[in-house]
Length: 392
Image 1 (cartoon, helix red, strand yellow):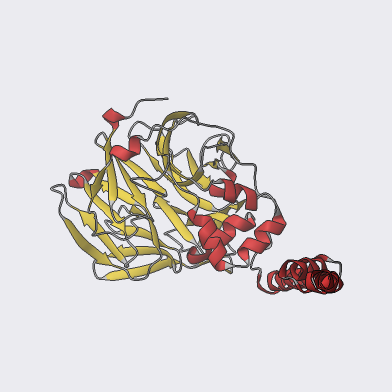
Image 2 (tube, helix red, strand yellow):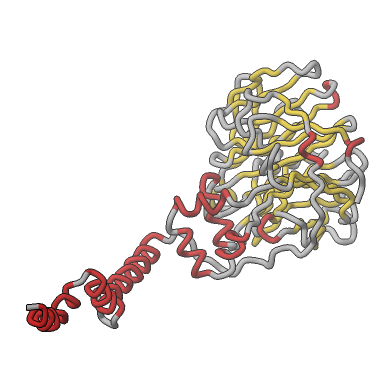
């Protein structure tokens, strides 16, 4: 009987082995992995689907990005000791202006469409309503009004009870991204148009594309004419006049540099590099009382950002998926500002290397021995004493 059972088992063993789950899995895996198998077919389908999606939905025409800056400064995290002004009352105060003639009254524009101000005693008030979410750079005008760059509308003049659009087009083309402005002593207004391709809500696409469509513009108050002063700028951002107004500086965010245009003297009309290889993307720039300049440096660096921006193909793929682009953008953490001499040399650097207290600083202004910081990512204006900030 036992021998008979043993013989029967030997006869059906091949069938049992073929029917076992592990054997079925091995055959299934071999089928999937084989050329032309289900896995290979699925992989090809995914690749084709991705390629079609990118072709149909990619909004950029990317070029190679500039080489990231090699200049490195050890983190000092001095910005983590700042004071928060108006915390909870402000929404993305991008730029800050302090009126010395009014005893240090501070002005900023916020995402709710208001120009807000802080009195010298520390109280805040909603000062002028402009409307919209695109209010960026602000600057005083000699007539007592405020110049405001509305990223969507253009260059504005804001007075009590009235908002006037000074410029929304230039030489037949729209001003798509009005960013920062400054008024010269003769009344001429210089202001930047960040990108001719993308507006404020899509600025990251301009960063990914890395094309140079930004412009420095000039508004003539006598004629109302707007003209292009400099073009082909890699995201034209902050603007500032030198103390004697012999030159003007415009920040080029995506090239990690600031350019200088001579307005007077033998070099009048000539452009040259003011400072390059900055340890971040320069945003707003403001003249300091001693003739130097303070520059906000956006930290758009991370291993993931560096990887994606290395090739135009990966730029196209990332830019075709808005959710992926948002996640990628959020990997760039940190805040930094630098003081630069009139000759273009870095004097001081302050940072919050991980963005623990303040992140994405967009402006820095000096007044009465203190620095004031604006940021699109905060609900406050930062303040720190220069006594706490050593020179490089």
